[in-house]
Image (cartoon, rainbow over all chains, first blue to last red; front, side, top):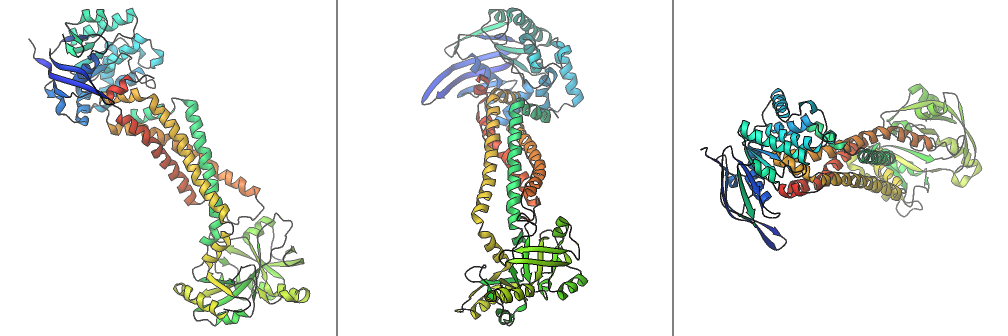
Length: 224
Length: 386
């Protein structure tokens, strides 16, 4: 049994809106072993995306700890957290979030610009990632020249190009038709099976849930 | 490499908006350059003033004459090296659009007091010998194709009648701040005719030009000169040549101040134009900036992206505007009566001000979008629609 790559202990998170304190996550504890494919499900407003953001180090808890790959994220400064994210986390968003002025190749290369890789090494990484998602022949296309499913595949290539420790996906099939969604889920499954990537995915899609090894439900900020 | 490419591509994301912004900046910089050139041209006489020259004029206004008899009294004041004088002649040469200074001067020593006018010694001697001779600046010679021996007929207005002057010399300016478009002729020629036609106006000079040995003593010498004529019928006011020129310009100070003010208002307009573009751009890209931050791009990267785009647009507009300033100022100068501004060049200070203004505007216009991009939490930015 592999050791935990994500450890969450007694996590509390609330947001302040004007004078109101809105609790979002309430005493969450969670352990995710390395190589896991975890699905987080729950109704809107249950705190799924907030939990995902905390695991990815783009938000900080009010209390409790989030440890990912041995690093306590709450101990890191904003700049250290940014560096940590660039090395350890690959992001896949619901709306792809590709930069429209960059080609598929340039979008995939973008996070690699923060690494110490040479231009040649970056090219190798980008080529491999685009090849893996089946878009090697579309590398010079701009996002507007791609379908939604292709855009999401480029986004996945961008997420995996830097070989991150974990992959974080927020509703990756939420904006796709059935066929494209199936292709994306198959791709994620392959990344988990073949490349042993730890994947945490927030989803409403029952087919996505089927692909996950483990499903955890969130309701009103509590894991059930 | 990709960062610069991204800045460039971002700037061209809305081509029409960027084009209009660049055009707006270019027009504003051109207008700024033109106004500054006019203001600089106005003040060129001040810049050319000699530190060791004083001007004595009538205490009420320089349009009132002073008696020639003051010359010897002024010359006896300690510290005074040389005294000469001049009268504004005015008149019309060819037509009223041909404007240049026409001055009646003491032919014997005017060039001793004005070393910035470079004149051939033989030409100067010929000028001194001939009562109706004149010396003209090289710009006049060039503009009217005049050469030595030519006659310049001038219709007098302040001093009525037809006057004819023979060109006996052409002076050259010592540097580019020296007026190359003055016409100087014998004060005696003017005075003799006044004795015959209007005796009450004879024996009077417009102002005295005084060379002093030590510029540090200018205030004390000025006081001594003025003290001599206190309570006389023509009290004097003595001041440095710079102050005199400035007081001359001050008659137009309202216009110059307005132009100065407008030239800087234009900078404000550029700021608003570019600021508006950058704010719109940044607002549209809140989610992109959040994505970049998610990937680990730091505040420095975002500052570089937003600031770089703002600077790229402002620099492009500034460069185009500056390039257009030169033909614009030439066209403007050509539309004025000839000689209106003896020196009308786009000065290095104007180029510097235009460039630095464009760059400053580029920086300032980026501040608010940068602040907004940096202060937006990643989670909030990712939720942004649009």
